[in-house]
Amino acid sequence: TPAILVIAIVVLVPVGWLFYLSFVGSDGEFSLEHYKKMIEYKSYARVFMTTFQVSLLTTLICILLGYPLAYFLAHLPGRWTGLFMLAVLLPFWTSLLVRTYAWLVLLQRKGILNDFAMQIGLWDSPIKLVHNMTGTLIGMAHIMLPFLVLPLYGAMKKIEPDMMHAASNLGASPIRSFWNVYFPLSVSGLVAGALIVFVLCLGFYVTPAVLGGGRVVMVATQITAILEYRFDWGAASALGVVLLIATIGVLYLAGRFFKFDSALFGKG
Image (cartoon, rainbow, N blue to C red; front, side, top):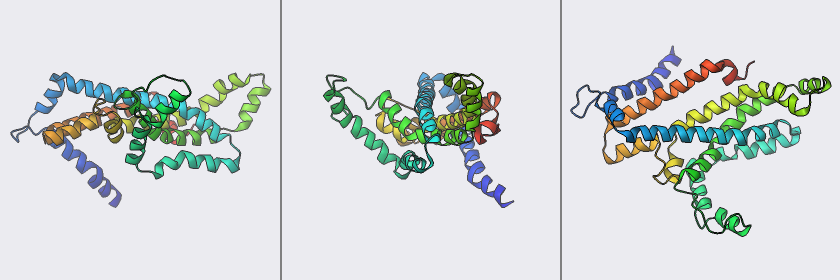
């Protein structure tokens, strides 16, 4: 069918070409040299560890910030929901590069954030918030937050208020009602949002490159460096293949622990 043909051309052909290039050695023959180098050189292991560390921390930050925000949006009166939802979606209307450089301006030593913090006495002298892990996590959490809030908000809107009222009438405290009734019903949206954020972070490039300043090297930035300085398509493709397999592995493991129909589509 035309749909299958489009998928084959747009997805399968590029992925197949990526796999092919990863097995082409420097002499143009079939070789496993690129994969052997990833095993032999510890620098590759550090890159993957950094990638998963940044992705996991960003996901956790988005969960901590996104759950209260989604809860707030889900319980707003109808006339206010649109306004606050617009504020959540506003970052999508701005270029990713522009948002990243805006954080670079805000977080630098003489930036607005450092000046404000010193004026109110949070710290005495400017602290380094860019070109390190801190700046990278702040920027990525800001960019990824809507991807967690939207599916979580959708799951929360499906929860009937009568269920909380029933729990209260049966003698449950508000906290117990939340943890035993509300939270389990919102887990599907939370899992969906967390998966989206984590997988997107695995292949992220712009924000770690700008706010990390070369000190937070993720797989995407390493691939770019290999192509820019060595023009080694085989090594870059091998890194891409390993990242792709790791991403599929994450989704597979998530599917083992959570039902995909529940996690991704909000079904019970």
